[in-house]
Image (cartoon, rainbow, N blue to C red):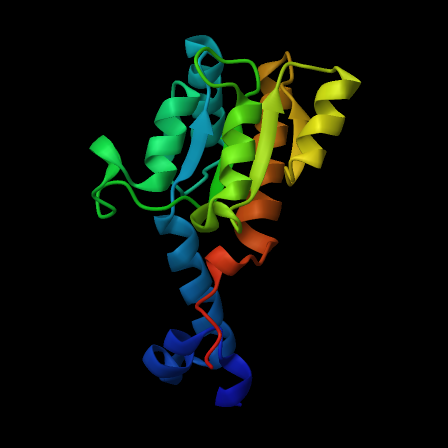
Length: 182
């Protein structure tokens, strides 16, 4: 059984006496709880509403709000004030607004998909734009999803719960699993 659990090495080693199913759940939850979610959002009102929805939805991951594309790229690159990964851990998910000052969300997305460190990080565009050209371009730049910001707080809460359930609880990505042994 151990050889089939290569992506859960701690589960087979650290939680043996609890049963392997419970051990896998426990390790998955531990990982989920530690990696932050980066939200690149320059509108203070939208950022506040999103933070409130994350609290209401009981999302265990810390939500880090970055106000522009330059800050997002520095955080993801681990440079400048974000160089200490103990204080600024690599994210489990990036929520990305498109229309921002300095660098746009498209600039950040393009940079992420050109940077080896960011290739496996899921990026969800979260924007107010319904424009078909923006949707097409976001997917052409390898966004993992495109969501239009809802106008009502209860709709935002529903959206955040869906993000939590799919991207943080059910989705398996290279960033969420230990590296496969050689």
